Length: 532
Image (cartoon, rainbow, N blue to C red; front, side):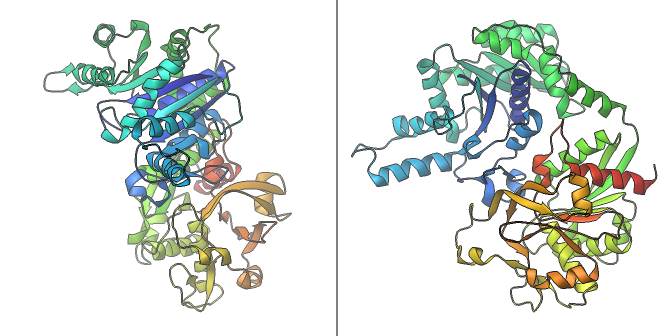
């Protein structure tokens, strides 16, 4: 296997995940089998207990690992299915090392960062627990060069350079700032970042320069000269109208060629990426807009990243630009709900645990249901749609989720029996892919075009089957159920234009080339409703 490491310098949030995903896409297009993994230096075992304001959305893999949102980019770009092996934190590494020490695996030796922690990192980089054979393992290192917490990861990289001679490629993503007062682009931060890497025994093979302005060739050659990198191995990553244009920009500048050459591999012909280019052409050609509201409580854009991207994918294939309008549910009331939602062609009621903002989501669900606006509830959004229906259609005053009101008489959303015994927060929810059987003749079955599906979950509470018959009689159908536990996975109101909600997270399965059918159908309904 060949190993590609992607690091960042100068500042964070430069887009290492997008560059890593683009590299994966370009190598896939050349016929190579790849996987991409994210190594995060924070001490949390996983991001499952992190507030979305801290770290954006928590992505979930097929096998039930709560991970960094960059794994969503990896999957949307490359269509690989990531697993728990694709996401590693310092917390997981140290936890594993400490477990081994407690078992006596180190035979009485003093346990140290070097070699024991670095050996554990290298074991995970090499994917020694994964029987799959890959041509390339792409490893993105979180944080920025110089961060104290990432030092063990960088030391592991340095060791691997010598243990796998000829099979390692270091790619460093850095920032070229533009000083408006001086009207100059500055390379000094990049030079210092590379110098810091060199001080750690790491020499970049390829530099990717993040910039808001086009960089002249002279500046690129200057960076190459001062940073000891081949001029042809310096590329720029300018701001793009869409992140999905980055692979094309990287290919046109020869990023994949630079990687192959640095590894001593044959370059061959440049792949056409025709499907990818068709998607971008269709995106560019879409001029009409459709406005869709996201009703949630996290104003941070990355908090609902996968939902936003899924809506954009579906918009392109419906020949529309999706204009996403965030509506903060904690400020949504009966008095202002019409002002916020009436101008929308569709409404997504978003996930998000906890009491804050729930009454606003319930108000949104009632307004959309009574005004027949296309509405899509996801996970906690579904639960609030179920609560609203209980209160206003079934007449169950005070109906609620047991998560919010444990003593409610009408616990239409309740905790699973096995979940009641759990005391630890991290990694203990219903996580990962579970099967779902769709009711014949339902909207859900028509959208999917089949009777059995599998979707990813991340929740602790469920639809309470004790009330199921009441919902069915009143017009809310339970059209998707788990075949093993008879848990309700999908509810819909068949008499409405498009009023459907899922307990699972369909956004985790939407990709650039294969948008999710639920999002496709929802956006189409929004387009039809808008009349444009």
